[in-house]
Image (spheres, rainbow, N blue to C red):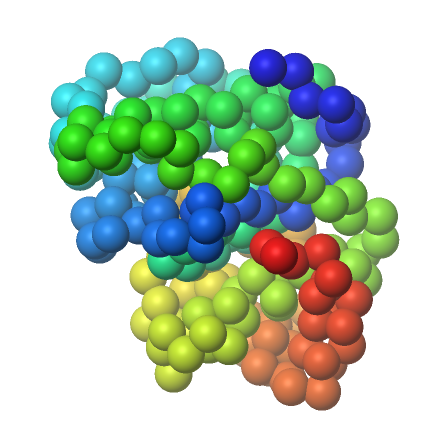
Length: 213
């Protein structure tokens, strides 16, 4: 199905969606891992992978990388929704990436848990990011989700987010941190930026009326 809105190549977008009726979309740690490894695959490959429908992991061969259609700057997976900060590198790239990722993940869950019916609340949502300031605040908003939702008291220990890569330098094979971090003197400065509550309130004020409502 074609989307009514057109996503422009070269632009950055906030891409997000949540479970139908606010239900969970991840039921175990293995589900999170499957979603992430599937995202890594479709960020780097232009073809389907061969994997068992009920396998919790996917073998991703990064040594055979093809030209990506998207660049993922930040992400966070939550129990009933997800967030991506994405740059589109080719026409139709974001839609291609999201369709393959979501279709693969839903098929995996349906087979694994013998479930039927929709998992997500309609097509993914998108918001155009039209300034550097907005992009930085969005990266902070995305990374703060687990803390704000009381899923963790230490964002560095939240596995299903790009935040640990931002502050530790660890390469998670999915997020590309350089574009955001080059606006800061150090990783510690970015960490302070994320955890600064006053600035976060400004970020939240901007974005709250767009959220999964």
